[in-house]
Length: 265
Ligand code: R5P
Image (cartoon, rainbow, N blue to C red; front, side, top):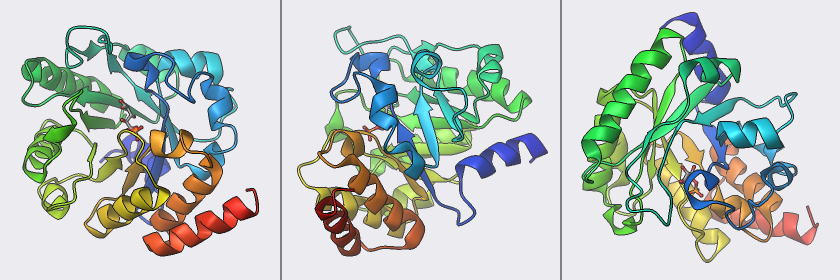
């Protein structure tokens, strides 16, 4: 692996081999998502606890100060919306020139395996990998399911992750599943991070799936709504960080969370 690629991956994946990515890219198909109406404000108290920030070029340019110290993962696929015909109908939205100009440490894009647009989105990934590899920029593939959240089984996710890695993704973001998640990770030759999905009802649930996912081989998370849509985003991200980087169990994370909330941190 050449120096530039190694350097960028090292910025994203920490010396302990783990990572906490904070995504705020949801507006690219959902519009002004709850609690993300003003993304710059949303991340102010929590960014310091993340290892990287994932977002689109529009939010980066307009809402984020260029003196940001955290590496940027640029979302570069899109072209569909929640009110449109099919969320899977995505294209690559950002040129390689723009990716370099914005000094992205990585890019991310979605693939929709099994959908009507499977071929198109897999071709998007292959072409993006070709362009980004030329400049040492890692591609993180997102195994998206659109509205079909029930698709999140180990068999399906394992298939998606493996295909993404085979096509050249350097990191794969996928959903956690309760059964056989280790099979998803074991079948994927590149690091896997877990996405959160829609906000779950309790903090403990989040801590449990993050903890379990890590035990089963994920290197970390790319977790948004279950942090910044909660009532206590700072306590939430700090507790998740403790699971990822300090080997906290989900119970220890909950204790830390409750302590931080009591201290109003
Ligand atoms: C969503 O469409 C984006 O790609 C998000 O980055 C991803 O789903 C992770 O965010 P969340 O934890 O809110 O699902």
